[in-house]
Length: 276
Image (cartoon, rainbow, N blue to C red; front, side, top):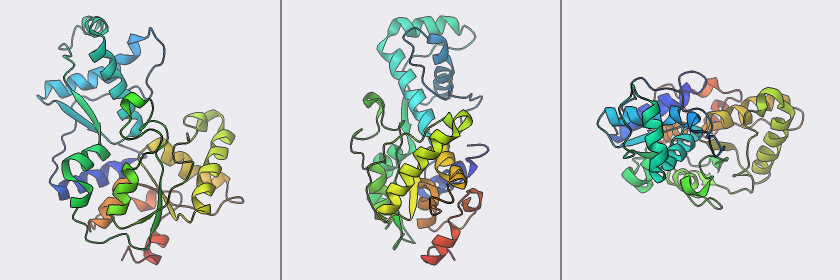
């Protein structure tokens, strides 16, 4: 959010201002830990997400929202762990003796959920509908799995499709919308990620999609930047954060960060009459 996905954060801030949502950044936030530890006896890896929830508590609030799918998943799984196991919560509070005790009262929600429940997609003040743009939502893994933290039906999610439809886009479905992008294999097994990217994007293109819309910076990197390794097999396809298209449809004229993508979406958006 502060570097390679800064366009995600920037457009979210502008969208929130336009919708009357006041976002307060956590002071002294730390990395969420990036992935939720699956080991049954591994409390030490839950300290990072719980510390962030303590920061929310220190500010006097009871809800925190995230943009990154991975941050959402990690924070919410850790939160549910300590809420459902008082003994583990007590042990973690004892270990973090320089922090105030976490009381387990914070709610973690994803920004998509906030938009749907607090604003309502049908109430978005759309000025420039995304008419003529065919988009496919891509959820990946961490918004929907495990089921206990899913923001929607984990087998057939519609929340992002509902948002895009409300913005005026033509939405198409495809069977790879829940497929893993390859995640951190992009570092040491690039060929695995390239194979995943090809499957996901070729499926979308075969169904007439012109852009893929998502919520995870790692998914964005894998589906966008890894296209440079697939130039002979795959036509270029823009990969966008949902907040970028939301900002565009709300008529926000600031820098929406399109030029920071490997596949620049501006030529397509201009062709569709969506960019001046």
